[in-house]
Length: 169
Image 1 (tube, one colour):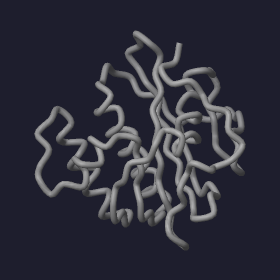
Image 2 (cartoon, helix red, strand yellow):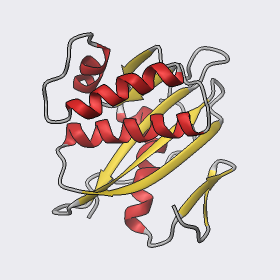
Image 3 (cartoon, one colour):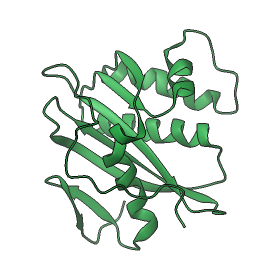
């Protein structure tokens, strides 16, 4: 059973767009109970809500909630960097993560190397700030994160909808 149930929504009402001509990165995580793996998704959208790029991926390991969120954000930033996409805002659903990432102080937790990597990637992809959003504002990334856990097929995100296609990642 997934920790996060997919939310069927037809609109992006709770998603707040970035300023005009800017892009925003949203991330989400999902996992099965008692599993040693989880999935994350990253979605980059423009100010009109159009998906620019998105991906979901499973990762093996028993990580705490905070580390899973850091790994999801890092995965989204690497996606933006790979496609040379300048993103202005990163949005996650945890105020604790936002406070760590917006702080100039060093993070001393288990995931300090991931946090350092995220801060470097922020600079490389143009992130000006990290902010928190309600889960309802990240429903697309949360739904996308649950897909790899519910399907054995690899998914490629094209034209705003998941498309099943055999390929290697």
